[in-house]
Image (tube, rainbow, N blue to C red; front, side, top):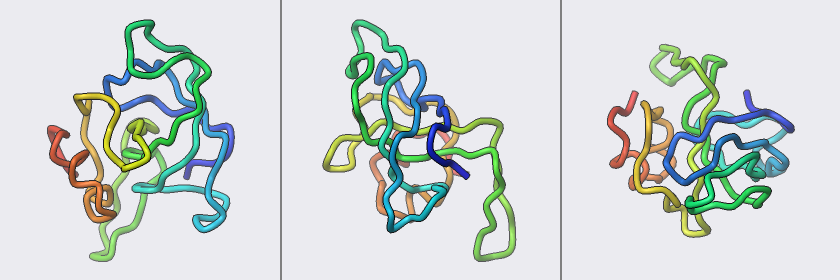
Length: 121
């Protein structure tokens, strides 16, 4: 459950330190979950990274603390709220994905992100 002003940890090496959610599509509703794309602002960035400080970016939610029920009846949850910074085409701005990524990301059509991740849960 990611809502406005939630703080996300970047799950890639794009150079962002923290991401703050500032926009969720009305199609999604008030809260976003695994595999949803949200608008974020970068809070702190590496000077040599692909993103700048206070830059407006799109981010794909890869992990959430709140459990998500799957169709088979199982639940999945993670230790943190994490997102991957993406461009307009849906490809990651970083070159590596850090930590596991939920299977819902691959099911939503972001196969490039799922293939870069070490583990798809």
